[in-house]
Image 1 (cartoon, helix red, strand yellow):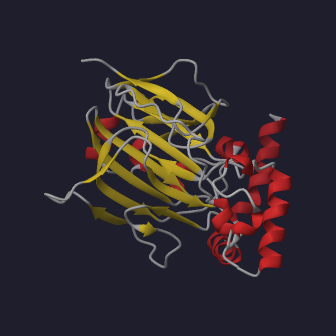
Image 2 (cartoon, rainbow, N blue to C red; image 1 turned 135 degrees about the vertical axis):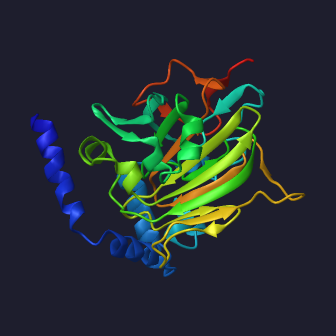
Length: 291
């Protein structure tokens, strides 16, 4: 009870601060190219968050033109081996398992004792959300020190992307425990793919100080001036956007959370994974279910 009260106190200021204004400010600061400042910012960040640059494609601070280039840094070749087994579903990010399991009665677990509706996450798209009911989901949190590019967990063809403006609450243990419907309230990008095991949704969830999100097919998605839901269809005959397992599909310019959603009876998470476990890009976290 005491911990829950303290979490509520910690989160309370986020209801009143200008979340989007602060995120736009971070956007500008993270792109300053004055070397003394950007080098100092990167070095402080590395020290505070214990970032390992040894696995980065560029291991020297001076190689990055600005802080954002450092934050979205590429990894060295072979730093994250990708399983090529056709039955393996891999982690799309380096991060921590926040929640993982089955979607029951349209409900996803946000934290212990706190759920939210799938239809709210997917902006009340009843047709789409119904197809995922009793399916599988995994919520993966990216900490500041993590690698912040997002990769395909399974081969798929992009069909649709929806940008949903919203709040920018921080995403961490405190907020997931006390902010109702956190992931269904925050700004997010929902990507739908057709795969050999049915439809797959990958949701990029924004947070405070996430200065923008990007996809490889649309470029920068946020920040923007539009506060309306935008849907883009990519189902173009003769010109499919096919992405293979392990392909980069996007990035967070500053961090947050990725939610993967699969249809019922087509895949299963490996039983050893539970909330709090660390995952890395390329690590097998699920298996295709046989016919």
